Length: 102
Image (cartoon, rainbow, N blue to C red; front, side, top):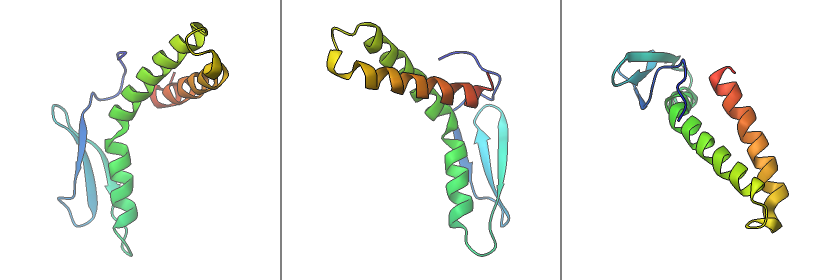
């Protein structure tokens, strides 16, 4: 995994407050806060879970991008899937760039 400017993971979320979900880093404390909705808590909790999973998703996308690039370059091993793998690698690179601000 590359070094990034964001708070290192893993992150987790808690619902210690009646108004907020907190996304924590074990080493660095609160990373983000997500306001709980007054009408339903499901959306706020889903948002908190998604944010908390961001470092793991980024790592998975970085790994997938590496593997897909490798298969795309060595097309003889994955000739039947080369175009799809190259497209997936391009998509993954775009998501990584968005997540890392690069």
